[in-house]
Image 1: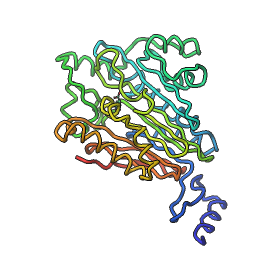
Image 2 (image 1 turned 60 degrees about the vertical axis):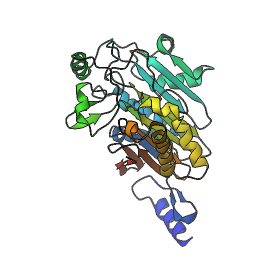
Image 3 (image 1 turned 60 degrees about the horizontal axis):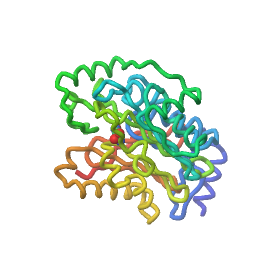
Image 4 (image 1 turned 135 degrees about the horizontal axis):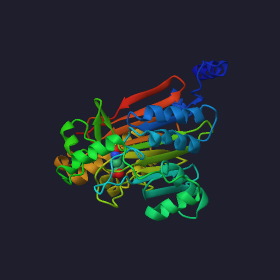
Length: 339
Ligand code: SD4
């Protein structure tokens, strides 16, 4: 109790940064607000989300504005700068979910810069959850989103031309320690760093409400029309305001098979920590596929709970995520792995 009072006093004196607001039993700090997101691009995205959260803003706004940074980056595999499908077109998938189980998503969307914002409009302005393809694009245009030129970024063009040399259809995602995959590269390796196809973000605001978003170009050189987990509520993203929020990255087909993010949240409901829940979900994928096949793919989950605890887990080494809970606390964490 002494510790608690002292901490709160320090908090109210202002330590130059906006962060913790309380404690749970066992003296574990409730980190509120907090935002976490997948991969290194999460640092810049968290920064934008923190800008909302630190001013007392809503988690829903934070997770939208956060991933918009990544979507807008032409040098990234998320958004219109991403690798195209095998027919040469960039197609984008995105989802968003708030504290009241409202959710929206778009999939197979072309020529729109911010799919996450279109997903939010689907959630807020239609009676539906999901719009796809030309219908999603038509809705976006009606909502005032500009139709961007049908043009690949320089990097994507280079990767695509390289891929066309063999046109090998061998979709594999995010196995960072296998640099050879650049020959058919679903994920680009540039300047010594992997450039991932997806960002998933979950946040809790100062009011204790949770939201999440996920946005992706999917899998480079995928079959035309292929969707992964990211736009599917329960697979790539799930939020339950009583329990926690989770999002996924990696090979979406295997995330869908286990309703991954929903599974992580339900495991937290049963009392598991975010990290333990993510680990169990990864174990389930490995069990289904068997060790040898699981070794050929990557899947990573990240999650937060209502105490502001966070965690992540992945199949194999190489996955990391960005965690932000104060002006001066926005850092990378290496995902623990099972194989
Ligand atoms: C998908 N889960 O479309 C996404 C891809 C991804 O980093 O996460 N790439 O399957």
